[in-house]
Image 1 (cartoon, rainbow, N blue to C red):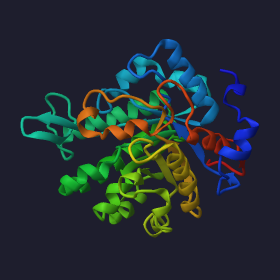
Image 2 (image 1 turned 90 degrees about the vertical axis):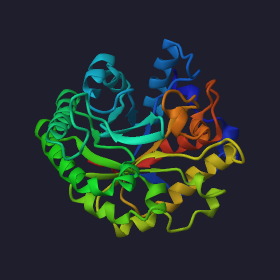
Image 3 (image 1 turned 120 degrees about the vertical axis):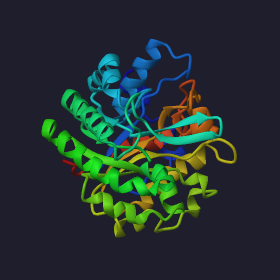
Image 4 (image 1 turned 180 degrees about the vertical axis):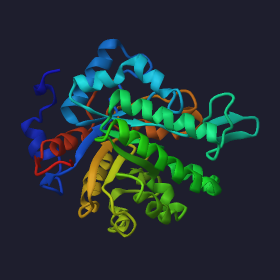
Length: 337
């Protein structure tokens, strides 16, 4: 895909695209390089998605079917890390410790333990296997970013008594990761929506001294009807609890329902305005292309999430895409080291 393919036309530069509220950026941009034509994507669609991601971002989110113990074997087999690096992208890997399963009584959030291992964070066998998995991934791939759990506060809102065991678990994993890949930055990710709703601010303080970064996902459209209604301190309140760089690992606004492409683009501008003054490491938009839900996602994720993308499923660019390009091309003062 030639660079000219994603250039802005004169009319778009002058009329359609709003001005950014910042004039330079010191943070990386990231994306999940999912291909167009969801569920019917061709090999060419996949290659083009990776190539385009390398042009509009610096970080690639890595999502595979198994993100617990066993992820290492999948990553070795599918060569996705090699694929993103070919296009100049830094991989962001997540190793989860829990998963959502369907049972007769409904959905249940459980520890993702292999057969024969007690599914508890305090289990010596589970801890050893999970830490070894983290170390194997770090040794083999040496990712720039390694998260030890995605939206972990959701699990601990249901199982608060297990949080101390988790704190000691990530401390052990951090040590082993740094032993084999000293430059890898280690973090965990929390849902910002649920952190606010469940008043889990103190959790941030307990995590900060054990990690290099604090990661957050943020989808405020679920609680606000428009980006303009976000309070001025919506993100700045983090400064009271976080003394490490912040990685916004997933951000976005749906373009379906009462929303639209303009509202989606407005959110990106509003987000950049409201996060001024924070020490930000990265800002990652959720998807490159609109997608379809499959597997367990169909039961736990709202369908409107599928439209949190820079492009439509057929590859057409949405309004937010052009604003994202302006952000990508901002003068860069100094990137995180």
